Length: 168
Image (cartoon, one colour):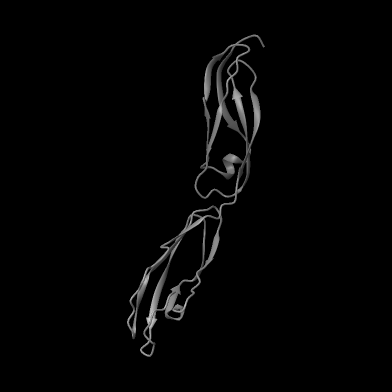
């Protein structure tokens, strides 16, 4: 047309985004424009902020440019949230532990955290010459998204063990 449009406003309507991702924040920059003359155009940046742990999948909505004196214009907006199986584990080492014969104790905790968006299953393995002295509990566990768990590492050295250096 040859007439200016007034009160341009960007919004989104319909689709699966609002129902399946209620904490998602979809924003437009700029979100509006007062008056646009015939032949003018505007570039709008679309920014989506996903909450931590958002379920992987495909979502969609319609980006709409609405005005107070002309027809609206729609564009399909497809969003894919990828599978994220990221996790962290600390510490990376307990260093050297001096364990006397006929003693037992706690070495420390292994802290495991699921920072992804899917459930993860873990098994903590022991290795090395001293693995028979070590117990880990729990050593098998699952973590829902954004959850964490500690596994306690303990030792027991019987009275009949041979003194020495036993790496684990």
